[in-house]
Image: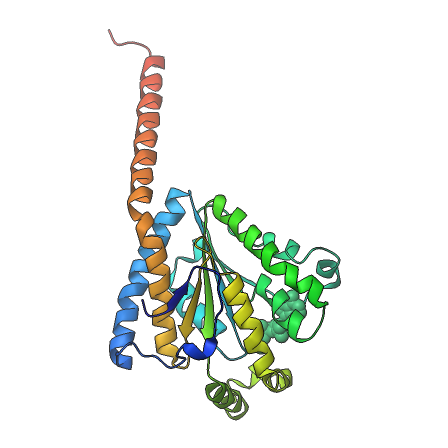
Length: 282
Ligand code: AMP
Ligand code: MG
């Protein structure tokens, strides 16, 4: 696996994980492998859609410029749009703030057969909310358990959950922020707030380490994706998704066979009834 999977709670030290791993691949090799994986992903997504037994929730988290949008373009873009949706979570509205923090999240979870990508998520409520002291510690502390139970409930309902942390280095972020200023095509993404968020780098690191460490479970694992190189990030994300979906292939194919047989039987019955209604010959 190109991304590192965490599926048990425990202490996480982000410094132990590379941001610039290439898995020993060149960019060219990586891009060629991505094309193959993207095809496999599309195939698996079609099975998920047709079988209608499970859904897939992909949670994208990461600091500013870590590549959440780029991942969506590359990976969600490789799927059949009929079965895919993106839900982006911004600063909560007053209506959202008047509810519990999972209210707006639950409304966006995927129905059976569907894939939903979360661009930011319930984790903002233990990240930005903690770093900016939007709520007291006594409130955000309890949210780790709330999130774990919520995700367990989604999993019990047939939702496959993949949580991706796009792991970026401090220096790569600086380069990307500067590039946004210089490139007229990227300037629309410029957000002065990103520079002030950057000043809180260590506070975010601590918040991410807790979010990853306390909410890594077998039914909703976190994947730490080295994201300094965009081509590797896309490859690692695609590979993670294929790895999660592939074990279901046989069961979804069986379900499709069954659906097909039922449809054929229904058609045969309909034809029989129609011919019984026709006046008999001779
Ligand atoms: P962007 O993803 O660049 O469009 O920015 C969305 C902004 O909304 C980010 O600054 C997030 O930190 C912020 N945001 C998202 N969810 C929450 C939340 N639950 N509480 C406060 N701010 C949030
Ligand atoms: Mg932003």
